[in-house]
Image (cartoon, rainbow, N blue to C red; front, side, top):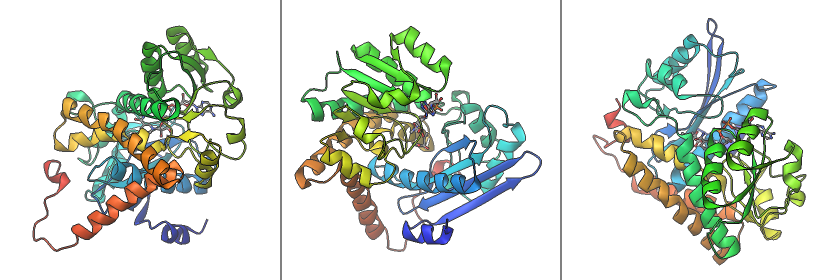
Length: 365
Ligand SMILES: NC(=O)C1=CN([C@@H]2O[C@H](COP(=O)(O)OP(=O)(O)OC[C@H]3O[C@@H](n4cnc5c(N)ncnc54)[C@H](O)[C@@H]3O)[C@@H](O)[C@H]2O)C=CC1
Ligand SMILES: CC(C)CC(=O)C(=O)O
């Protein structure tokens, strides 16, 4: 990968490599765009096969956060971190403390939170070294684990998608196939079960599927079978790029709505789904509940205020479908347009010099 070429093509601002020999920290912080405010995005810990794969993931996820934060109406830019390592065996206190010091060194350009492989406890360790972290434990007066709130936002957005696909947002009796029943999707399945949806689930983690089977009566299938099942809604809630040339022809659902980031292998797959008549709900519009929740910490966390904003996901998703229908463009393009237009408008209207900026971080520093 030609890193600077890639950064130039997609307009990235900064890529930071962080290393700490004692703790074994190998982290890559990618900052995509800070037009709207400091870059906020989670830290993923994963066993990447190569360093190149880790860099690519950090870059792709950071860009997704720029669009997610913009489309959610937050005054935040986009960034993300990946830590190379096995979250089950390679974490230690020194690692997250060292990482916190690297974040502090960025002076507020980047604020972190949880993502796959990291927890509230990890954020609490980071918080010992920097204020530029969210999703810390409620005992520290903050918002805690964002996953249940992400799940609620996905559930609400899935209802909006059902309305677009089936003419009603009632999920009672609908069959939803869920790929990956981790932190977010477990909570999503609970909402769906409570509304009377039938669940088909898969996961590479046997305990996770057993829990969904026992608690929600979900039918369990093997990981590769999930693309072939008969269902109304397909919910990708594991990792990215699972909507691709191999899987799209197999999917029978009329609606796709799931929590995973970067679901489309590339943007052309949005076009493929559009042509196939499938209602694809753009991931970053749908899964913004977690970031909306943690962003509220920057103003002193207020759960009612955060949840009110999470409710807007239903309308944001509906607006994307409306643009897609009106202009006959794929939903992923409609969402990108919404986000890009907001960034451009704000870039223009905030370009004048101010001696003292009113800043989203004023309560954190
Ligand atoms: N946690 C949050 O608040 C947010 C999460 N997301 C995204 O949602 C997705 C899920 O996040 P979490 O639930 O937090 O992560 P998680 O790690 O708790 O859950 C992911 C699940 O997917 C399973 N999985 C991995 N590969 C699989 C495969 N090939 N087939 C089937 N299952 C597989 C894992 O075993 C795990 O149970 C990720 O893409 C994440 O970036 C997006 C926004 C916010
Ligand atoms: C998990 C969130 C708090 C932030 C994030 O990184 C995301 O939405 O993907």
